[in-house]
Amino acid sequence: MASLVEKQLFKALFSSFLLVLLFSDTVLSFRKTFDKNKPCKHFSFYFHDILYDGDNVANATSAAIVSPPGLGNFKFGKFVIFDDPITMDKNYLSHPVARAQGFYFYDMKMDFNAWFCYTLVFNSTEHKGTLNIMGADLMMEPTRDLSVVGGTGDFFMARGIATFVTDIFQGAKYFRVKMDIKLYEC
Image 1 (cartoon, helix red, strand yellow):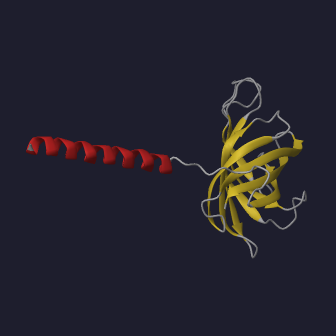
Image 2 (spheres, rainbow, N blue to C red; image 1 turned 60 degrees about the vertical axis):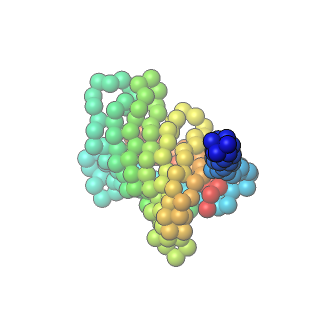
Image 3 (spheres, helix red, strand yellow; image 1 turned 180 degrees about the horizontal axis):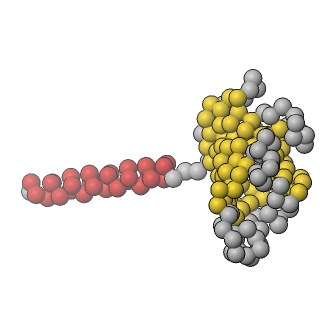
């Protein structure tokens, strides 16, 4: 008789354990849904990049540290590090609201395509902290979305999308990109 009671108790405890496990997994896997039309923060900035060409030390904001020759016509393998000013308007000489510090490299042999990884560093009276952005820049597309994967300070643990639109491109010397940043986790 004692073994029958023990078996029933074991079945009841095991069933309760499975129910707790099932419901805890359901709660843990719940994802918050976001309305892409209602970000919690929205910014528009201009990203200015002047590539070092050997003669423009004072003005250069980026430098190619690897540029292998002979890998095609699309700069495949070129690796660039940058510390670029971020402004509110198209004027390169405007007061920067942040600095974009990071790198990009060309990662496609058949077309222009780069992969960006950088941090927007804010240090102003309006914002303090960082936003971390990374992703593929499919340069031939009119708009490109990169992921905002985190942040610090005013942007602690932020997530969202940074949409790129090329505003001006002057060969390998200078480009300006409009960044439309929408944060959905603030």
